[in-house]
Image (cartoon, rainbow, N blue to C red; front, side, top):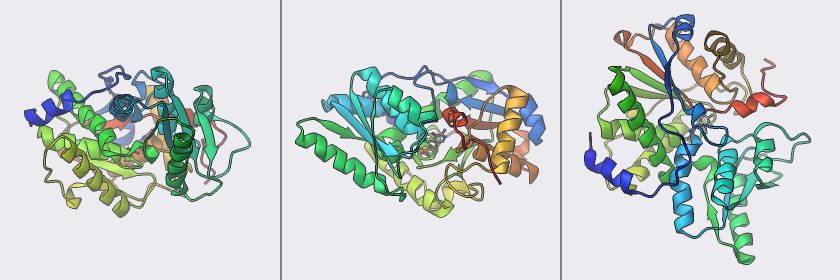
Length: 335
Ligand SMILES: *Cc1c(COP(=O)(O)O)cnc(C)c1O
C-alpha cells in the first residue's frame, strides 16, 4: 500500500455526510441465479445520506472545498433524473448552502423521482431547453456568472460530479472495501461497477493501484461509448493522482469498460436491465435501478453466462444507488 499517498488523502478536508463503511453483504441466491460461485454487494445505496448512492463520497470532498472557499450557493447539473444533482441538493441543504440545478432539455410535465426530491430539498431548478447534454456545461457557467453579478459566491460542481476532487472519494471507497475484505479473509477476483461520467471508476482504479489490491476493477458504461468513457476515466484518474502528489502508471489498457448494455440510450431502461432488477429484488430483496446498476448487473450476468471464472474467487458488485428512478413512469423497458 502507498501509505504516503493515503496519508495525504486523509489530511484533505472532508465534510462528513456518509455513514461509513457502507455494508458489504453476501448475495448467495443472486449468485446462483447468475451461475457464479460467490457474489458480494458493496452497498453504497445504503450510504446513509440523502437517499444514498456513490455521489455522496465525492461530495464530502467537494463540500469541504466549497465551504473553504466561502461559497453560498452550489451550482451543478445533469439530466432531470440525476442522482448526483439530488445528492448535491441534499448536501447543500445539510450544510446551510443554496443550490441551483441546471438540467438539459425541457421541463417535464410531471415532476417525479429525483427531480421531485431535488425540489423538495430546496434547490432552484433550471432547464437549458436543449436536448444536447453538453448544454448543461454552459448552463452551469451562466448560472455562476448570474449569481456573481447578484453578489453571491457560487461554487460550480461539474456535470455528474466528475472532477479530480470528487474522484478522491472513490479512492477511499476502494480502501474501505479492501479493509472489509481483509477483516473477513475475502479475496475478490473482480469488482464490477456502472460507469456514467467516469469519476467513480477512476477512483476505484486509482485506489486499487495505490493499495496494490489483488483484484481487477471493471466498468460497464451506461452512457458514453466505451472508448470515450475509457479516455475520460484515465484523464480523471491522472488528475486525481496529481492532486495527492502521486504518479499513476495506469494506461488506457488498464481501464476495462464493457460496452453493449446501454440499449436505446442513457436512462432508457432495457429488457436485460429490467431482468436484473427483478432477479435481485426476488432473490435478495435488493433494489437495483434502471439507469445504472440494473444495466451494469446485466453485463455481469452476461459475463457469467460466458463462463467468467476468476479461479472461483468472489465477485463484488458495487451497488452505486439510483433507486429514486424506480419511482418514475419510465422505470420499465418498453423493448
Ligand atoms: C452517477 C452514478 C453512477 C456512475 O458514476 P460516475 O462517477 O458518473 O461514472 C453509477 N450508479 C449510480 C446510481 C449513479 O448515480
